[in-house]
Length: 184
Image (cartoon, rainbow, N blue to C red):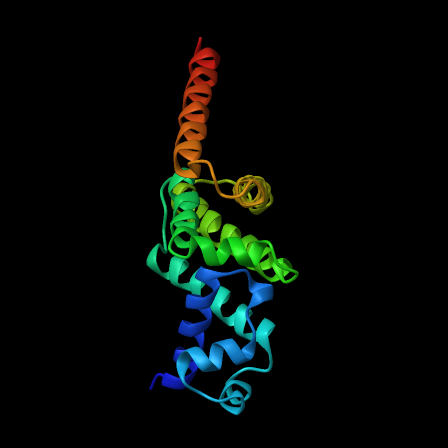
């Protein structure tokens, strides 16, 4: 059975995070917004970082659960970006806070999980070694994570979806040229 008080606290926190930076939100603000008292907050959460971590983990798990398999690198990156875009201002405020390492930890985790799902799909039935799969996973995970962090650090201003699509188109074209040239 869902805990309505816990969910109310998380909803209020996300609402406030959409409105203002993390450092301008207090526990008092959260409990006033959802009509609770401070004791209710502390009954459910140790502190603000614990609340923040739970919210980020839930966002990531929701994205992973919604897309258990992906058949393209582009698709796996877009899963993450769609998850971020649902709470764009909140994620931006978290990234620009002293607690940004929590966000980075979970972004790296979701990059790993979505890229791993992609590799499981495209490498199924191949005889690639586990070591080679790990190299591919690490490379694509870092590419995905790096693009997202770059986008966050630049204020999330550019159309990251278009940039990822363009990057993947270029990669497909270059890969096809390499395959064609090696067949000759």
